[in-house]
Structures are given as structure tokens and as C-alpha cells.
Length: 490
Ligand code: ZN
Image (cartoon, rainbow, N blue to C red; front, side, top):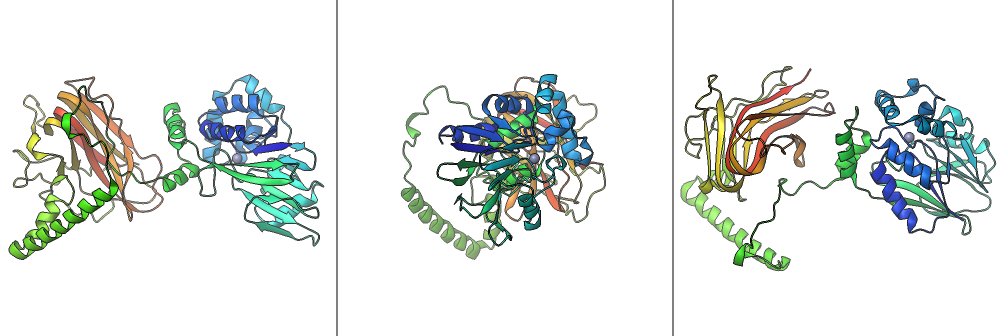
């Protein structure tokens, strides 16, 4: 027989589906779930339904036990408790009575399954170290004990000496005079720094145990969280996802296929060697030019900074205040734009750095709207072609434990296509990391009225940090932007 052991799925349907896809190609006879089907994750009903249909045997986890009415939520942290309240509202009576009928322990041929540990399964203690593992070995006879609960794959071994050892989880063949505790890890809420789903296979013919790690669609999981409006979206698991994800190589763009062929300028094949060769030539030319400029004018360095090594045309702010202190609650951190002319290198904007893709077909002005009685200065962007723009406010400091809100208002004066959004970047040693951005979807459909947009950081910062407020977008046509605002919350 080949068994698959899954634990701590925690309402993560993407992770569970990926694990089942893997199970399907591994010749598994029976699937056993070690508990915590729900809790934390945004898809409890779907996950419970899949487990009900596809899993042969299930033991009760501590989160399941709360929903089944065996445990109160008192021993849970705030996030877990709030999510259990939310989860309860997603499940019907049939679901709770199903959970209510689950056992604490399953005994198989030569193995035992329990969510937490076998000495007192209803207390849901943890097995983290050798002493706790030794207690678990003493509590039963089986050679193999499968557990979950910590969300960290682990392996404990004891032999003739009676000593218990913890070893790095690895595939192994059972030896006659040894006993093993296998923590199968978590399918949906990994906590060992690797966001992939974890599960184990036991082959009772070859007497071997295998640890599996399965990647799944973490973005779709995040999408579930956003869409279902759950009370505690950020978990340690999602922070692991963020740490393991590749940094974006480009600004996000919306793409529309062109109506007609772009003509003779297509690049059907790009040979990397050729690209590198050209890059070397251009780099050398660039370096030579730079040296010449420095030598000739002394302004070479300044030119390089303002014109950029990339294709963005940058107009530095006329005067950017240095933010050397932490702001007060509700203090406005973004300045209303000041200027009364087109913004160019010769006449830059006060406090705002402007970045354009192509200054020849992009015009940016700052002035109040003609009929605005309040006289609020607005940015007016007129792109004759579809181009990117960025309006960058100076960085501000943010204290550990605080949260921030960013706002702006957009008006589609005559936008043919494109989008605009408010973004906040967090400055890190590895560069600027996108912390949050507003929804950019509705600009085109609602012309000629001010559309407010707002976004707030989800979790308080774990350490002091630096933030940057940015308006960015890609449009063809005329767009106005006003009431840019950025502040620390209570
Ligand atoms: Zn759990």
C-alpha cells in the first residue's frame, strides 16, 4: 500500500489542489489527513468539500476542534481566533457535524496518526524537541507515528539505546530496531521558510517514507484573500511567499493587442549573444561619452543623472525637503504641486520628481482647473501617444508598528486608453519594493468626474523603514490628478 499524509491544509485550496495533482501521479492507494483542514485560509468550504470527497481517513486538528465545538478559541492567538469566527460563518451545519464526528487518533498497520502528539491528543501539545518526542514514543507502540500541527516538516528517531534524536527531514527506509516520528509539515500554511506545500508518502511494501514539496499558485491564493475580504489577510506564510518571490523586472503594464500588424519593425528572434555584444559596444561608447563629457564640461555627471542610463526621462524636483524625522499621526506627507507652467528640465516641479517615457509626446502642467472654486492645483498630463508617466514624492520615514494610507483623485478628461494608480514603495537594501497599490481599473469607464482612490498598508511595519509615494500610469489622452495624500494612521 502507498499512503499519502496531508496535514494543516488550513483553507488553502490552491495548495491542496497542487498536492492532489502530485498525488495523482504517484500511485497512491489511500490519502490520510492529519487535521486542521480549515482556519487561516480563505477557502474553507471548498477545501472541506475536497477533503470530504477525496480523503480516505481524517483526524481532528485543533482548528477543526473549535468549529466542532470540542474546544473554545481561548487558547488561540488573535489572528487564528478571528479567522475561526470568519470560517464558522462560511460553513453550514452539515460541515460542523462532519467535523464533530472525526477521531483524534487513527491506527493503521504499523503506524499511528494524530494531529499533535499521541500522549494526550485532545490537548494539542507540540513536538518540537527530543524530550517531547520521547514522551510521544512512550505513549504508543507503533514503529511509525505521523503528526502535523507545527507546520514544520521534522523527523525524530529512537533505537535500542532509548535515546531520541532529531534529524533533518529526509526520505528514509525503515530499520527494524528503530522507531520514527514523522511530522509531515503543512499543505497550506508552511512555516519553515519554504512556502511550498509539504506532505509525506509512506510505501508499506518498500517500508520507505518520502517528504514531498509542491509549488502552487500563491498569487491565486492571495487573490482569494482579497476577494473574500477576510479579517486577517497577512500571515507568516504570506511573508515567506514575499521573501521567496522574484523582484519585478518591470513596472506592471496593462496590455491590449494591437488591431493591426505593427509592420516591419517586429523582432521575430532575439539572440542573446548578439544582445550582449551590442550592449558591450554601447556600454563602451557610453563610457567614452561620459568621460568626454566630464572632461569637457564638468557637468557630465549631472547630465548622466538627469538623462539617465535607461530610457526614462527624469525631471528632478526643484526642491525636495529632507524628511529626517518620523511624522505625526495624520500629518500630510505629500505636498500639493506648485508651478504655473509646463514642467520641463528648465522649469521643474516643486517637491515632485517627474518621470516620462517620451517628453516629445508627453506634456505635464500644474494649475487649478478652470472652473474650480477651491483653486486646488492639479497635475494635467497630456499624452499624444500611449506612454508611461511617474510622479514621485520625496521619501518619508515610517516608525515600526505604524500603518500608512495613500490617496489621490483621478479624472479622465479625455483618456482613450490606459490606467493610473497610487503606489507606495518601501526602500530596502535590495532596492525599492512595491508595498501597496490602488485599484487601477475604473478610470476609463467613468469619464469627466473625480474618482477618489485610496490604499492602506495591511500590517504594521516590523521595523523602522522608509516609504515613497508615487503616482504612476500609462495613458493616451488627457488625465488630471489632484488631492495626492499620504499619512500615518492612528
Ligand atoms: Zn495547523
